[in-house]
Length: 265
Image (cartoon, rainbow, N blue to C red):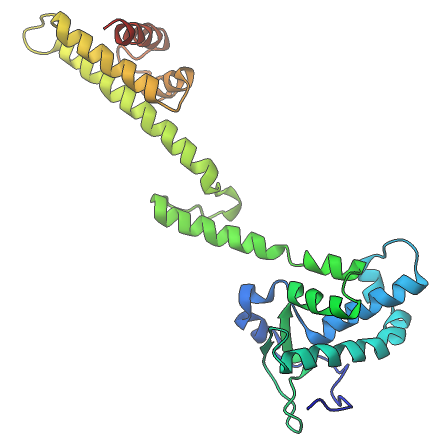
């Protein structure tokens, strides 16, 4: 049963309260204790009567007059939300209860902003400007999620992570680069095999059929590659510019010949 008075209402937060956030989903992102969220809803109602345009979030929250005027409504909203938690109508994580009544302590009871807004809408509250801002107040959690995702992607893709977090590219940028590298290397291997075959044995030229087969292999790899031909040539030229037969002009000629061979055979 809810008590009529909350002896600890409005007192400073408990020490080491950050430990509670570590146990909440997403480390507490988008979660609010019942006391804080009730204050935001009450301030929204006060501003709707006394303000004009959308208020600055920080300025209104720090406005002592507004907080004092909103306190009675805040207390009513706290009671309504606490009752909803007790009756199972509002999903919440409770870290502390009142010793006498057994009721959840408002500032140690947390719920997701969306669940709170849905419940407050039943009473005609929860749609003010501060409540809207509160929904996007914890954007830093997405930076944390991206950081964790990058580290897991390094495991998946077998990449040594950079010591500088800012220099780590997200996986959607890394994967196309890996495809480009693989495609370039595949074409490079096929071409080197062709050159080696030309100079192997007694130095005789390749038989016409063998030469056609090698050209078709190169042509097929070009067709299946996700990378533009110019990018492949640039990659090979940059990596193996000192190797015979791998200059840009030579590659352009051989690639053109390979594509013609594939088309005509």
